[in-house]
Amino acid sequence: MTKSDDNNGQKSAKHNATMQKRKEKIDANIKRTDEERGVAILLTGNGKGKSSSAFGMAIRSLGYGYKVGIVQFIKGKQLSGEELFIREKHPEVYFHQMATGFTWDTQDRDSDIAAAEATWAHAEKLLQDDSYHLVILDELTYMLSYKYLDEERVLSALRNRPAEQSVVVTGRGGGSALRDLVDTVSEIQDIKHAFRAGVKARKGVDY
Image (cartoon, rainbow, N blue to C red; front, side, top):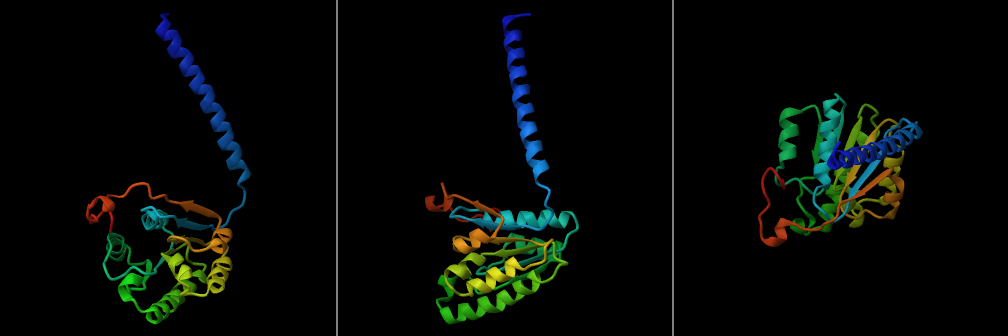
């Protein structure tokens, strides 16, 4: 056996031992998770990809044949690839959009509040229906940050939804009460973005 073979053998043995310890740790963590119920997830932060991640979970649920409901706040004037795909390929998905565009487009607080409340009525309907495995509330956090919706009304609906139903909330901010209520919080950081370098948003990638 050459010195090189011996070194490779030692590296392999060290790697195997490390992986075995990692497996034992993961297996132990899995064994401790014995509670079966729906979860509430908040996807937040200044980075790109929050809504994309939520739609990825929608596709995952649809792949298992689960029932999915999606309500989008703020977005709606410009059709997105996600909307086109779901409306065409999965018409069974409950899909509602506020359809007012961004708040800086409307510049009408009273109109925005009325639109938010009408859209929230769709969200509440889904959050009371135990036939929905997954509910996505896209950009809901802005409705709380701008105080377009009553915070306690929103939190109560999330808190009292069916036990087996999971919900995903996306958007920047949203307040500490929402963070405390949900089970999982993932924050996407804005490290670098092509838009700031003068690159236009790309169809099929950015929208």
